[in-house]
Every structure is written in C-alpha cells, then in structure tokens.
Length: 299
Ligand SMILES: [Zn+2]
Image 1 (cartoon, rainbow, N blue to C red):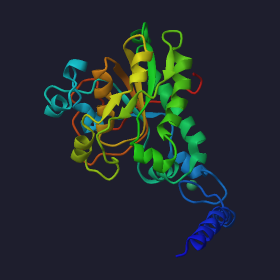
Image 2 (cartoon, rainbow, N blue to C red):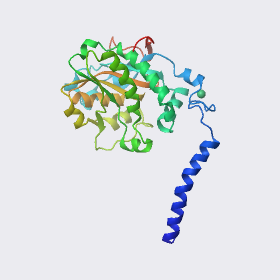
Image 3 (tube, rainbow, N blue to C red):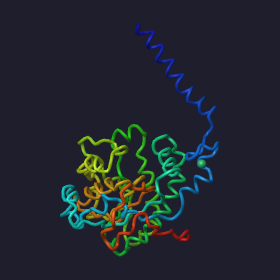
Image 4 (cartoon, rainbow, N blue to C red):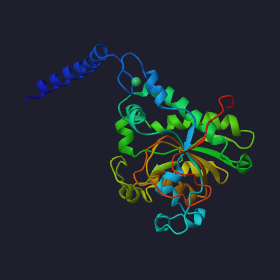
C-alpha cells in the first residue's frame, strides 16, 4: 500500500471508530449490569442479589486456613505450602457469594467497562467494612498505622482495564475504617503491594494449585511504602473476589516479610470453592457461615 494512502486510511479510522462507539451507545441503551434490563445501572432485583451484611469466609478458603501461624518467621511460601499446624490468623469477610448475578455484576464492573457500578459496589463494600470493624480489637491498633491495602492486579491486567479497580474498593473501605478507628490509629489507603518483575499469569482461569504456584513469591512491598511508614503497620487487605485465598495469602506473606501484620481481609464476593475444608481453628467459622450484619446506624 502506498504511504499516503495508508495515512489517509489511518486518519479515516481514527475519526470513524470513536463515532461508531458513540452510535453504538445511542442505539444500545445502558442496561442493568446484572441482567441487562434497560435504562438502569443495576435493577432492583440484581441490587437485592448483592445482599446485605457480610459473610465470614476464611474458613472456606483452603489457602487461608493453611496460613502460617507464626507470622514473619514462618512466612515463606514453602512453609505455608507444607501446611504444618497452619491456621487462618485473621478474619476475611465477603459482602456476597460470588455466583450467578453477583458474579455477572462484578465481572461487568471489573472487566467490561461498567465503571458506573462503582458507586453501588463501593456502598456494598462500605457495609462489609462496617462489619469488619467489629472483628478487629481497636486496642490492637494503638501505636500503629492502619494501612488499607488494595490487592494489586498484574501490570497487563491494569493496562487492559485502564484502571486499578481494587483501589476504588479500598477507597470506600478506608472511609469506614477512618471513621471508626482514627482515634486509635491513623488510617491510610496505601497501595503497598506490587507484582515483582517475575512474570505472573492472570489468576482467573487457573485452578487452585496453579493459582498458588503462580503467585508464590510474586508480590513485594513497594520501597516507597516501606520508607514512608514509622513502623509495622496493621493492614486490611481489600480485593474484589476471593476464590481459594491464594492471592490474599501471598499478599499477607509479602506484608509479613516486610514486618507488617494483616488484621482483616475484605472482599466484594467469595466464590464457593468446590472442596470445602474443615475449619482447623476454634476461631475459624464453618464455610460461608453468616457471621455479621452491620448496624446501619453506625459508621
Ligand atoms: Zn438486573
């Protein structure tokens, strides 16, 4: 193709493609992110499917009940994988069970450009955060900073989505924790974790073992976060979906290795795991047990 012709075609494409996008928006009206019902961001039925309150789910996530109990000194992936005397050390709350409509809504928001659901999902996460406040003894936070830490996506996933969506969730959660804990400890949103240079695949589509192998040692604490803090932080991990717990476990390993402690995990949705595990700690609840409903009058 002659150079000037290809330039002409490229210019035409640059004009036509955005126009076509606008036309598609005009012809195909906004639909419910859960069921496609027209002219609403999220219809009443799909909104109801997101439920209320929070579920305690760490007892149902096999990679969390195997977390090392000894903190930083027992924090290598190999030790965690060995599974000796390992129990979940911190509670994880999910706002909903991530199947059916909930799954569709979360995937639409996360991967299909439905950023107009951020408000609804953020409100739902704030509700879960209010439930989480009750699970962390406030006296355990005194003298430390509280970091609300979004679980980082891989760099290719961030490029594909054009945003780090878990930061949006962490922002909502931070508002609640700050309102509840600021008299005991300063509360900050800190994107402390980053994928190390080693290439990791996107977790979606991988089985439980593959997720664990893919992530072991994959995360590290950013140097900027480490130098900006005065000492060990109490961390709340925030993610969109919990499946096996491999991601949260790797986040905790990286934070513990840097001297910090995870005190709570909070996710939008927990996907039921096909092989339920027996809780190994008296503090670990039965899988997906309904533990807490937030008090709408607080926070
Ligand atoms: Zn709907």
